[in-house]
Image 1 (cartoon, rainbow, N blue to C red):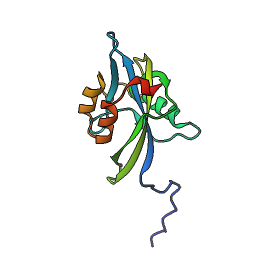
Image 2 (tube, rainbow, N blue to C red):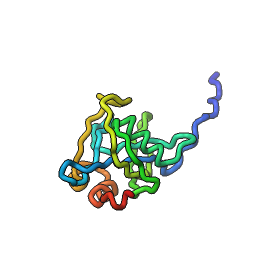
Image 3 (cartoon, rainbow, N blue to C red):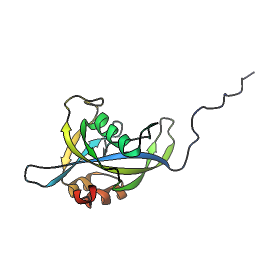
Length: 153
């Protein structure tokens, strides 16, 4: 006889779930704005650093921590989001989870050689309009294409 399943201690799914992302940016040597894209670990698509909420951390701080863990960048993160976008994340069980991502600009002041996910992702600095052409999510495309550091202050 089969034992009844234990109740799950996991939080029940919410539609959509929330994530927080950093939009790392800097000025190139000529003074033009560049933004940083990274590849996802599984599908190798171009994305921005993002992750799930962290207990005890405000959303902007979560975004900044993800930027360091996934891309090795540190700097000043805006407390105000530049916008948000939606996507569907494929979970390990194969199910698609709707996610709404708040995006916080992060002016990059330091780029580390060694960081948690170094070697697992590619990194690419591009002008915002070029970066917009590389991502798949339509709302993220618009956010990137229209990004300007004046709004990031």
